[in-house]
Image (cartoon, rainbow, N blue to C red; front, side, top):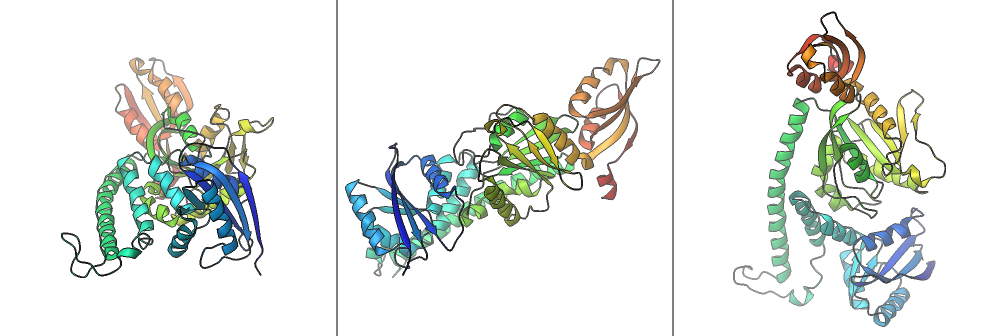
Amino acid sequence: MSMELFDRQKDAVGQGERTILVHIELTSISQSPDSVNEFKQLAVSSGLNIIETVLVKRSFTKAQFFIGTGKVDELALSVSDNEIELVIFSHQLSPSQERNLEKALKCQVMDRTGLILDIFALRASSFEGKLQVELAQLKHLSTRLVRGWTHLERQKGGIGLRGPGETQLETDKRLVSIRIKNINKRLAKVHKQHDLGRKSRVKNQLPMISLAGYTNAGKSTLFNLLTNAEVYADDKLFATLDSTIRRVMLPASGEAVIADTVGFIQDLPHELVEAFKSTLEETRQANVLLHIVDASDPNNRDKIDQVEDIIEQIGAQKIPRILVMNKIDGLVNFKPRIDKDSEGNISRVWLSAETGEGVDLLYEALSESLSGMMTSARIKLDVQSAYIRSEIHKVGFIKKEIMNEFGQWLLEINVTSHYLERLLDKQGVSLLWKQKSQQSQTA
């Protein structure tokens, strides 16, 4: 006999469709203690009017409804009494389970995957982002086309759409298949443009820094702080979907490229991981990966593991990375600091992107991580070019500087190869010697 507990929580009334959330805890599967709140936040992010949250604990699932028939009857009563339009389950439902529940509850039923896809559809703003979301939605829909067409599954002909003897269901599947092919073609063109941009960055030897992390960890806020950009940032799940890339001048490291990517979440739907592989390609191509973590979140250890799993899924596990423990302003009497591993390498940086406290330590960590891409050189600045010293101080590291008897500055600097080339194009700057980084020599 299955163990099943049933609990109800009234929720604040908001805007949108009147919704009941059904959070299912399977005793055979370990879940994050924060999974209920995260499920509610997802629904809130979608703009739904959450009337009630039902908590169900089961030892195993049922093939017909996922939950027991008794609980389905209780849900049906609540749906009727509260004029519910939508019921969302926290676990992925099979197409038949979704169909059976809709018949029993007499309202629309959606699972967690469908909810996340809906949020992505609301938030995507770029052309590529919209195509990626639509592709994920269509792939998800293609497994659920049976719903709504059961009354049309007899053989029917059609003008313009159906061939002789083709069912409505077959027509639908064919149209979805055609649309998926068209989207893939359009995405291929966008991906080609992205590849050209990546090749250009590699050619210019620009260091690539990618931000990754659990959704709502503060990636976009940190991105805005580092780049002075105005990327949309908000305290909600999946506030940012579209990948954003900016050039930035980093103290002691010079010019670099920073990419802000889509946030991850527990059990991110496979359709989305596949659809956003191009966006996540920025993560795979990075020289340094900054894994942003909400330091004030008591469940951040579980979320770190979730992000690490997805990083491995996209093949970026070998990229050097630094844990950026963000939001220390939410901790009591906590000061910014750098943690190092047993080999003396920087492993964590504690900071607050909201206040800017500790960002200097992050610059220090990036400088150390990108040191393999740096070039040591000695240059000479003519008298009329002495102003360039202040620029180099901002974007690179000056090891030594002296003025000779002619008023010229002799500088020993450590900058990226790309910045050094740009520097030598300036009038009044000449190269005395340079030494490639150890990484470049090895290559």
